[in-house]
Length: 621
Ligand SMILES: Nc1ncnc2c1ncn2[C@@H]1O[C@H](COP(=O)(O)OP(=O)(O)OP(=O)(O)O)[C@@H](O)[C@H]1O
Image 1 (cartoon, rainbow, N blue to C red):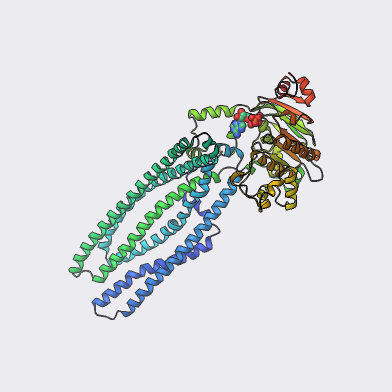
Image 2 (cartoon, rainbow, N blue to C red):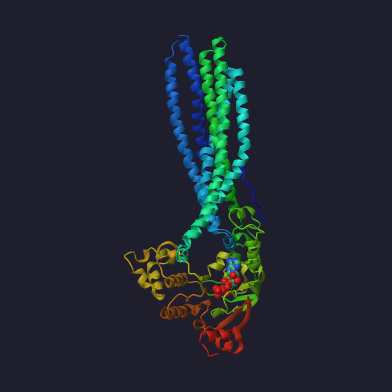
């Protein structure tokens, strides 16, 4: 079971400070000196005024006062810089681990979460955490120090005046603490709303062509506007609370000043208190007020930071993909790895495999993550969610069994939505079967570390995603060691050599955000180039020639022919002509295997296959 909607405490913040202890100790020392100098200032003033009043020499106090003031400024600046620097390092550490965690989450988490919201957790939530350190923790610690010192010295100077001050402080602090709980909740609302808004913007911008083509800019802007308005309202609610904190404190403090001045003045006039003592008391009152003010500010910052920490930890607590992996010793791991470079794998066997996306959602990581739902997901029980869940609970694959002999070419064909791509996703272990097992060279997939499995597989996805960056970046994704020469050779093999020569940039040609500068067919060929370069023994290809012209298709077929000589290939295909010469064709229909055989065999044995073939004019009906 996953923890649900836990509230982070300050204690949970401290592990993030590990590794920065030394610098924090330095900051603490600097901050202590700076606080000490601030406390010493009124004492010097007291001595100076009382000496002048008594016509005694006071030059030494003047020099000491100047030294204390300058020293305070220098140490204050040093503290501020060191603190900001440490905070940036902490944020860097949090971002690194959050990004590592995000990339290791199971695919199902990405099915149920919104990318924009995840981005906002890495961006704005981590930034809020920084303020816990810069204007939070240390502010509170040095405020407490200064507060305590001021209290002691004020009691020593005049207990009566201190009593008046104390009553005002207690009233103010009580009010602020009460508001603090609300501030935290509101801050969480603000961060969730900003996350939802980022997700809406991300949706709009990533689908900008579809939106423009559908003349839907205004409607999309309205959707974003709703989210922005929610964020605005949450921000206003937060501002209202923050605004309330200020007057509560200032009324109490101003009241205390007026009463201290009045009572103190009377006592000086009556000769019960020296003028220097009253001035020192008032300066300490300032020193008391300043830390209270900044402690209140820090309190608000910490509440906001903790709300951000909630959102960060929500992701940190999710089980990464590898969490369910068996603890294999390196030797076991090597044994269970179904191949070595000498012997190429791999017989694939699906034994009675059933699968529903609903079950993928329910098992393992992230179950019942109520706060994530609050962060922009649909609420369980809402009609919309119910409909989706009903659909997701349906069996997408139902008792699918077939085997793919090592070194053979198998095609998965069938109507749209039959479950063909889902089979490939299960082979990659993006999801786990609800029932049944999949074996690679006799080893059940769960017995293989995912990385070992995936490093055997080259996958050409249906949508052939291209990452932002250069041509070389994209090609080297799965083969970081590949030389430029190898890149050029593989580009030629898929008919993309012209792309590398398109500009002076050559292989450093920038493909733009999401490869926007490539045509659909070029994207698909780039995906081919990537997997061929990666030289994996098992090739999974999802409609790999759907976007290319017939001449390029011939070239790719030739390339596949060469590549499949020592590889096992599974191709999802709609155009039956592209797989007619495959060793085996598996016909899927509504999640079940309707027939298996070669093209010729299926034309005889499978009505569905014959129907598909005749619609594609491969045979006369
Ligand atoms: N991530 C997902 N979450 C929930 N349902 C999904 C998901 N991906 C696919 N489905 C559903 O699973 C079913 C099978 O989808 P799949 O993509 O495997 O079909 P396909 O045979 O490859 O279709 P096509 O030929 O159109 O690509 C469909 O009903 C689809 O709506």
